[in-house]
View 1 (cartoon, rainbow, N blue to C red):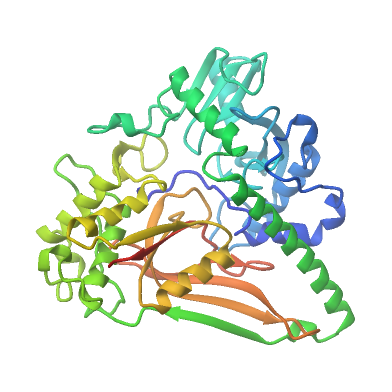
View 2: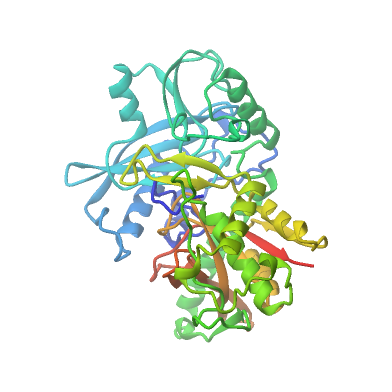
Length: 481
């Protein structure tokens, strides 16, 4: 996937503002029941109503305004209205699109999930009008239903008789022509394209998973269970702070893991970046991440057949990224991962040509190592919450194995960029009563894959955030044998 900004999609579990909302507003939503995801929820079983969705969205706006890097939302920003959004295949309303205004100016929206079929806040935009308002302008009336298919694709249809289907007349659409393909058009995400067959494929996937199909039912269940447990922990902690005056001064500790070796460039992994193919499209950040990982295995793990014996150790600077063995590695990974060429048609990156690697196909980059004879090689994609993800990442770093992480490139937002983890830190606080340790923060030192940037990114902070937090989605755990 390309390293680009598109929409600010906020993963609520990773955004401290949401945990903070649950901490300080628990009494306002104490009657919410966290249903199991394996029970299809209808419009009558929503765990959050419109009023509560607006409260959650408002707290997210204020929490985001507290982050110094944010120059869009301020303490003057207010949620003024909420519009229903649906998932094709789930009966009833699945989200409220909460409109934000700052000093009477349109300031985007926060999308809040209300029936536990997606993350609590899967998406937000910090400027402009809402999707609903955009469709009203395009269509010229308000008699339509919006179905969301992913962060890029949605349709407005005439009011269908059955709200679990989008078989009614499509009045307008967004995102279905945003991807330009060349060699493998049949491999596009099944619901991109606009035909009724493609919509049916998406709908069937939603019904089988019983939630937004990028996740499984178990992942959604785990997510909401963890969200609720964090809420309860924060309530308990507030009681302890009131009961023990110096509880806030509890001890902290850090649990660390790191790759053991360093390239001559000074990083644990090489300073490589994408290159442009002959057709003008970038090879893709996912394939760059694969090449970076393979370089570590070649240089320090004895896997000499990688890169056909090319000396990666002494060619780790950006200026050498285009050497043939490196570019060939990236090209083979792109082929195995079924990376597509696409052109951005919206936003400040309009017209940029990039490579798009689906998260579900990213693990296939392991086939490059198998091609070179390492038949015992494996790649396991791990999702789940940030603590369990850290634990898995730590195991690999402790074994001196770099890990690929899927994130949003500029902070909170949609999965759009692959990076390589070099170091990891989990911070814990000792609970005064009982001496237990409670997880607080998780951060990673990552190679951004642009040849210039290696930085620490926070993917979890408990309480009020003091750092810019990044949405993290999948970790790819790689072993070359």
